[in-house]
Length: 431
RNA sequence: GGGGAGAUACCGAAGCGGUCAAACGGGGCAGACUGUAAAUCUGUUGGCUACGCCUUCGUAGGUUCGAAUCCUGCUCUCCCCA
Image (cartoon, rainbow, N blue to C red; front, side, top):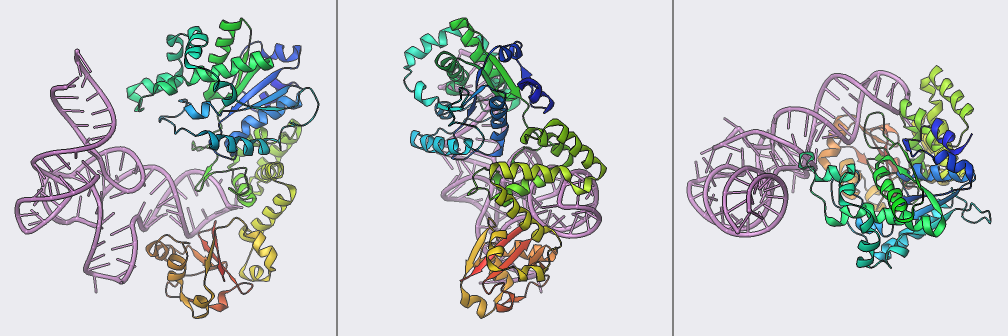
């Protein structure tokens, strides 16, 4: 199975430029994907691009991860109705380093093989470009008519869509991205750019630029934007993005995110986000259909990705924690845990500290959760939750807002586990 | 530069002198049902020392017994014309 076929059955192809398959058969080809360094960690929205690069490398080709230091300073108008905030250079450099470390988990940057992965930053060549040079050597080759015809631009110019206009800076974005492609084409013989389907317009500006300026041929391949079956944005939780950095999103939460995937989505995700071969995937899907409630797909999906992004250990920890929190976990089980297990289970759960004296003297539950700690943002909210039967302490439902919390509630003599609803845990540490 | 429209809670959007902590929709949160799913139904969605009180309707003043609602200045946004 070649690269295109592989991506195809996985549902990872939205659009391909004709001739790419022949090109890939002909020789080892270099391709790149752009990543915005807007943060110092990748999030799972980036994962699709990373998977594409990985498949590409596995197929014997050479992947390049391009960190958009320059483009990140400009802001891509695609898919956004607002101007972007600009980043400064030191932030960009810091972010680039962090991103590379994460990418190294997936791509082979180190080997001596001719198709070892590379990382580049477009800031490095864009910074040397003078304005005059840019408009003469690049701008001259592309007409404004061509640029205006792009969807990403049209959307922003159409007052009906409610968009807030677009600055010249963002209008220029596609040229800058095109320049990247041209640069990589010339410097590294890079003939393919991949990305999300929203990038099609930007990528084709690049292939067009290469064709007009050098007469060479370059290709575009885009994957569908990942959407959830219910139409909401993929990769977001109440707390924002799901990050790969365990400091930002704990492995437990990461695992939970995938485990909570809906049936429809799981079927698509397991193809996209794991490297399981086609046969295995088909079997899993069948199994899942026979007994949906056992959530074979979600379990496997969460296992594969958590293991890949974090580690086997992290995965096992997350499973254990999940069993305690969601399984038949009871108050007794909770109290039986030894301290280190207990802490690892609740690693990544929001933590609050209160003074020992407060608990010893006994403290009203409302004061404890809304005032001494920020488990609840207001007393009113807490009262409402209690009225709605949504509060548990140490896995036991609490229905009395006048309850006094004292030493008898402590687990391992120093912890109290507060739970809002089914899924929101907070750990109170008494010190 | 000229003319017009507007700024209301997380978002959209009503309200146009008292009965407004502010309709309605979306979103959020919780409950029931479940598979830690989806759909559905129910409750809730400014704060507090809670049958009451306090702070909110762009911002600063003013009129009034009383203002989200009327007047004035300011800031910002959008539209049309040049």
